[in-house]
Structures are given as structure tokens and as C-alpha cells.
Length: 248
Image (cartoon, rainbow, N blue to C red):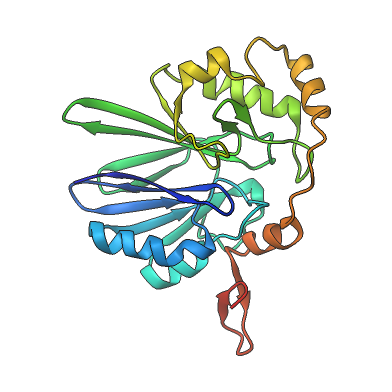
């Protein structure tokens, strides 16, 4: 069976990832988007996967998560970086923690800088052809780019350290899967990003900080709504006191 699915929301340019253990069909879903919950449930049904964990890389500023809604519908547990103040998550992840699904293991690597709590997740899947190594980098490392550092506890120097001292120390053939891409790209490798990422390669820490300071990017349109909603896993209190999806 296909054990890895990369799904895309073309409004927020967000990737959602479904990882499946071939033997047990237990699965992990990373960074789901509220308007795509129907799609994600259909993929689970089509694959026969049983999602046991729904995981966030950080509290996103550009879309609202469906993690809480999908957890309620599927019985999955939720996990989020401990530094992101996503208090309803049933597991608060710190650096080195692991998430198990079937015989598979996903390892949390704290990669702060875009936000203080941002996590990347390493999956080393053993297949008939050998080990396939994938790193899900959230907004820390993008394809030929990186996450911005000018809001939500961001820090350019800290991000540079996360990229160069943690992610770029992974093997060259590690496949890079970010939370977003805006140019139609789907994946890269650690070797490629270390060698040619236009924001990082060839720059000193001080040069990187100066470059990030001068980006002058527009404020995300949904940040004031999305961040607090995502810190509640996308749920709000309904009129009867129960939790309902944001906007329902």
C-alpha cells in the first residue's frame, strides 16, 4: 500500500501529510487545514488508514487547523510543540520526543526561530528498498527559503541555528517536506537546501539576521484569528458549552 500521502490546500498553500504504517494501517496526520477536513476523511477511508495521532508543527498564522475536529471524529490523539501554547493537545512535545504508529516512529526535533516552539518531525521508514528518510519541517525550512521571523516569537538568529545546527546535519538524502510552498514545488533534500537555499547558503549568522530584518513582508491577513484558534486546535465553545469547529 502507499504509506505516504502529500495533500495540498491551494488557498493557504499548505501541505498536509498522511503517514501510514503498512502492517497495521495506523497513521499520523500532520498540519491539517479546516476547509480540507472532508478531503482528509475521504483519504483515510480510501486508504483504510486509522489515524492515531494528529500533529501540529506550530500554531499557524495563515490558516485554521482541523486537528480538534478530526480528533473528535476519528478518536485520534493530538500532539503539538510544548512551546506553542496549544494547551488542548493531549501530548505536549519537547525535543527528542517520539510518536509511534504501528511499528513506525516519528521523532520530534525542536527547530525554533519561525516561532519559539516550532517542531520538525523525522520519519525514517524502513521499506523493502531500504530506509526512506523524510523530515517534515513546518515553516522552519522551506524549499529554497525559510519561515519569516518578524512576529509570533520569531528570532532570525535562532532560526539560523536551527537550520544549520540541526536540520542541515541530517544526511544529504533526507527528503524535505515543508508546511508550505508557493511556487508549485513539493519536496527537496537536505543536501540540496544546504548547498543552494537562497536565504541560507553562503551566509554567516550575522548576514542572515540582517537579510531577514530587511524582508518587510506584509502581515498575514488571518493572524489575529488563526493563531488563537490554532492554540485551541481549531475549536471554540458552542452555545451549549461543547467544542465546535471554528466558524461553525
